[in-house]
Length: 99
Image 1 (tube, rainbow, N blue to C red):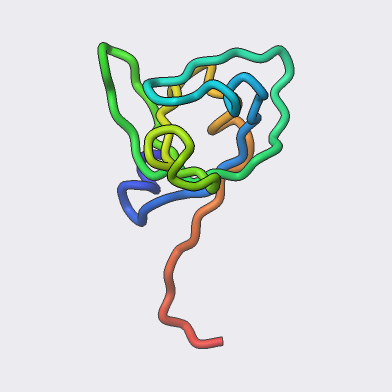
Image 2: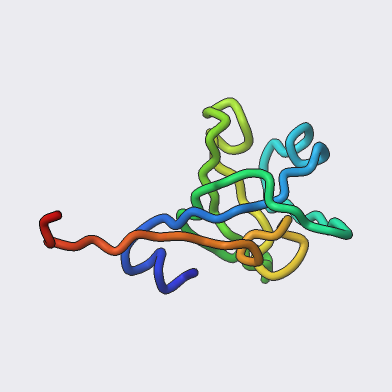
């Protein structure tokens, strides 16, 4: 995921949006484990970072700037990340070919 984002920009991934996340995220690095993750929302993973030895994804959401950190959120990279990276992720490779 990092390699693709670095090379060509954001990728689209599925995630399991829980009621807890939707109703309570206001900022910071979110970490939430669920027993059975199910993809129910598509997001754009735009980058990554590290804070206090915790790696996280930077994600753009479609719920507007009133959600989270101006329409973005940070979520744990390796576990407790509601399935980001576990479900399918998609990206496009630009081409000059004409249809």
